[in-house]
Image (cartoon, rainbow, N blue to C red; front, side, top):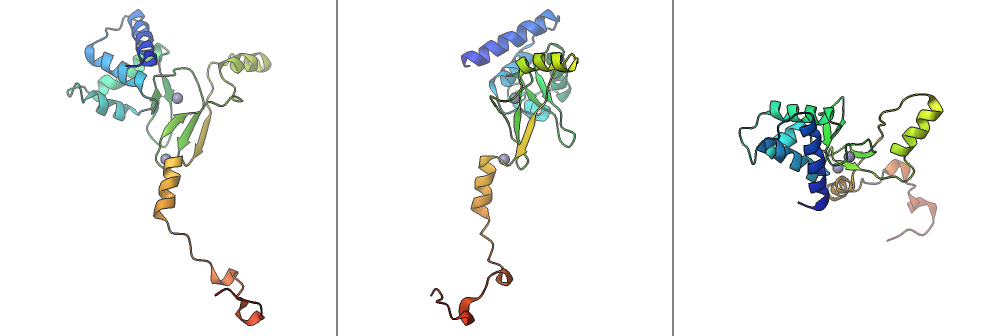
Length: 175
Ligand SMILES: [Zn+2]
Ligand SMILES: [Zn+2]
């Protein structure tokens, strides 16, 4: 476990403990998984991962732990209306994401120009709102999916109707 993962696990643990939540071994494993991945897993993916160690873990247990982490402010939930919610246990504060519309991968995006936590304060002053979170997603095709598209599709044949035929024009034509 790298230093940052360890640090996140400790933060999650102590926040849950202060809510009176018992840290069972399978719960500890969930924290470790969440703290170590930047893939923004769904609850189902998290479930599949924790079951590699504790096969009898139910999906309800996974959701229950997610709910507790949300209550403790130790996980960021990314809601999607068209697909499963995804979770970021490494960075529980709001931050922008890159979402691939082809393979559904989600990456953190660190844009120096993006508002972030500091700008929330500034915007709170400007708008009079007590702003608590901010959500920015950028949708596109990830580099891996672009490569795959490139590999599997042949370039379209030129449309004859759009291509002037030089044969009768008297100009030199290419062999
Ligand atoms: Zn992709
Ligand atoms: Zn994230």
